[in-house]
Image (tube, rainbow, N blue to C red; front, side):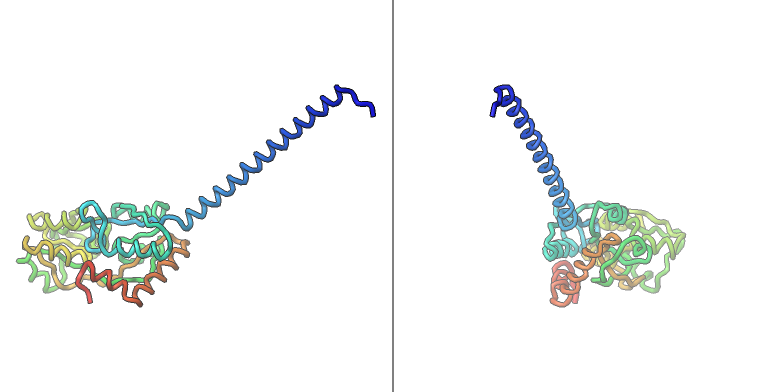
Length: 272
């Protein structure tokens, strides 16, 4: 066979070009494969990665700050829930009035912040089974305790301390619209306002009111021992997040049965 040197050189050049095309194709396929793997990992992380817990640390003993650290019933339960689900817990501190929006918009995965179950809230998010009963109570100056113990009436013009968008806030707006509402960021702020006479009473969850009555006993503040409402506390998740809802419900059920839920409550308050 008679093959010229020129023909051999051309064949070699064609072979090199063919190899380069194959190499580029392999690189492209590898990049596409790695991209798919990364997207799958990202999706998996979003589904089973960090558990973002929306918390408003203004409701001791349920959720509050000890120094710079989060503490309370909800904090302990959130960490236990994360361990049960195999997910790292990330606390997202949010003002109470913004909790629902943060959950619905995807900024948080679950609200664990002493939230009462209401029809209005249930229309936009899903609640777990209840884990504690509470009621709205009043913190007053000790000399005014007797008059409020005779029956729940808030006279027109009464200055009522509240935390905005809480069940207590909605209760006063609905039942006593002529009362003068004054809003505070925390129960501690409201207790100090009550002490100096800026408000006539402070209304909030019984857990918070009993706590404030204890810590401010020397300031002449006391809890009115009757409740205005009967409510249950639960955790809220986004509509459609059935996996998290089921996992949280299973955790609550087991914690009730094995006594670990009661143990957490006893750590932060006197309960039977």
